Image (cartoon, rainbow, N blue to C red; front, side, top):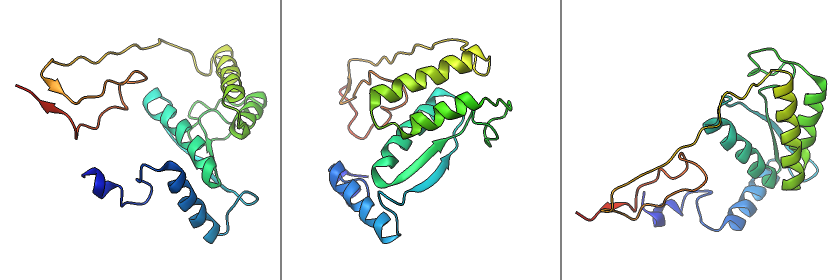
Length: 161
């Protein structure tokens, strides 16, 4: 879809502040706001390509009065296939999901990850590295520095050959 057409869709205008204001207005019409937030559960596979975007989504939803909870290790969670249950981890999950300061939230997530590893609930098997290569005649391609899965839109890519 061309950018000028995409901009006409709800939420696709490049003006993020405008999109959020419109979303907050929709939520207000539905009775939600800063004092009445919508609680949802976000289910994602516990692998980086799906879990990390789910965490980012939850952070963005907070801006429009939606509190998402990612459930993979919480006691009784639907996606907690191993049945792991630790009330300390549940409390940390709740704290990090309410923390607005990114640095404090990051440190809470690190605590959660440490506890999951110590309890053998989530052993780290490897830390993957990936790279993307292309030929010099590929033009207009944006090389991503923070992941291999978030630069897959090729509308502006062309071959000079």
